[in-house]
Amino acid sequence: MQLFPAHALKGEVWLPADKSVSQRAALFAALGEGVSTLHGYATAADPQSMLSCIRQLGIKIENTPDGAILVHGKGLSGFEKPDNPLDCGNSGTAMRFLAGVLAGQPFDSILIGDASLSRRPMARVANPLREMGASIELTDGHAPIFIKGNPALRGIRYEMPVASAQVKSCVLLAGLFAEGQTEVVEKVPTRDHTERMLGIQNNHGRLKVEGGRPILAQAYHIPRDFSAAAFFMVAASIVPSSELRLPQVGLNPSRTGLLDVLRQMGADIVLENERQTSGEPVADMRIRTAKLRGVSLDGAVIANIIDEIPILAVAATQAEGITEIRGAEELRVKETDRIAAMVTNLRKLGAKVEEWPDGMRITGGYKLKGTTVEAFLDHRIAMSMGIAAFVADGPTEILEAHHAAVSFPDFWDQLAHIRK
Image (cartoon, rainbow, N blue to C red; front, side, top):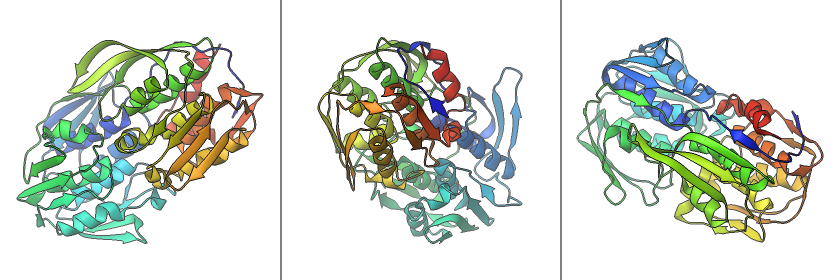
């Protein structure tokens, strides 16, 4: 895909539904007792992979005339043995969450994924599940994951060695099928959608769930995806003479670290019509062009901006001064090595970037120049390059740009819509 610089960005962007909330809602609805309704469920590839896996586990899913989805939950013991391996596509959330649920089932199962997902580390979920008594085998530390039916799980106390909402959720979900109480202790807070949906209190980083606790059927209203909003927040901040409105954006405090960081950099972002939707805070966002300045980031904030660091790196190239990002080694094991991918692409575009094992150092103020960059099979890299192209001189060619559809199917159409 070839993109050209933009003179301004104007208008309203309807973002996709939050895929993290969508996948949790679908799985909890499947484990619920009765029929749940999913309003505004994400159409992106990852949430659809979760629905596909749930169907294979014997759960009836229907579409309503008004666009909602009905999930006929069967309770904690309602899943059926799948006829084939469960294909999670590119979704690490689906694979890790389902590993926790399937570890407590009385039947054998296999979890597989695409080439990118099959390179992501899965020992981080296999290890605590084995402590709980699960029989689980990996393929050189990765998917395919082979899970032997074993309903005799036991509750454990698990201290998180890495900050990961997916690992935390995997253990809590397995705890629903374990005897006794399961406790997860996290030193660094991570996104808390799972706790909110389960009604679990976070007591100074300690989360507890009782085995056999039922999940009730309910209506889930999915907010718009903050991670998708991030690209337009940065775009409107760095493209001259821009003003964008983003309605119904989810503002879960465990997800909105980038909002605080961009404001710290000088971004002009206003929240309007703040409200609650299914336990999640939501607001409309208005963003105008602003003069940004560099920041130094490490510690706890990194866990809450980990998915947004690629687009934050683009913002840093347009900020005055130096931006340093440390403690982000988790980026090395995402859909691709996002540190290496961003450093490679930004250098091609003419940015001054130093690569570190756990992050990068970006010196702002260097004019980007259009060239050919790669998506590296990663949706966030593809979309970040799309925004970078808007502030680069001349055309920018993005190879494999279609990977944006993993989380934002109409991303390129939305960019074209607001470009002036």
